[in-house]
Length: 103
Image (tube, rainbow, N blue to C red; front, side, top):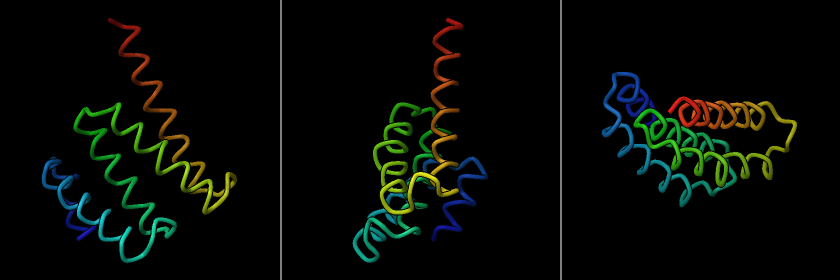
């Protein structure tokens, strides 16, 4: 299902991708637990889909509140996955500031 959601997202079918990713997120939380890497990746995939849909505030909130914080707790601050998502979050926030500053 994750591969299908990724294909949908890459084809520009973000609504279909979001639906699958939301289902996967809930299934993984229930079956695997919130601390598993697959669950964390699923959360970030949903955040990336929201960002592509222009739902930047929601995406940034999910990325920080759940993805980055969970990765810090589970993997540690110095882990590559944690650092890469901190970078993504910073890029999104910088992009939002550019939009605000250019208006």
